[in-house]
Image 1 (cartoon, one colour):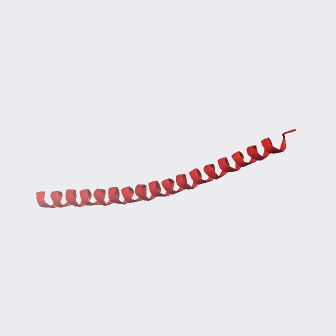
Image 2 (cartoon, one colour):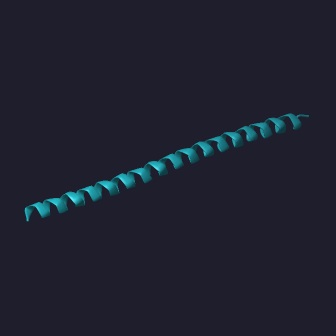
Image 3 (cartoon, one colour):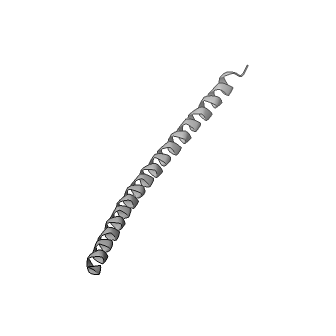
Amino acid sequence: MADGWLLKGLEDLVSKVRLLERENSEAVAKIQTLERENCEMAALIALASAKVDELLKEGTTTNRP
């Protein structure tokens, strides 16, 4: 009888480990997606900043008397 209880306990632990491994894999994939999106946002911000600088430079040269 104790063998059956022990086997059931081990099966439950294996099931929990597999669940944790799956959740970990999903978390890693989400982190990678967020990191990629973060890089894309940083690139867009840099592009927007460069465009603002360009517009400001054009504005200062066209507004001179």
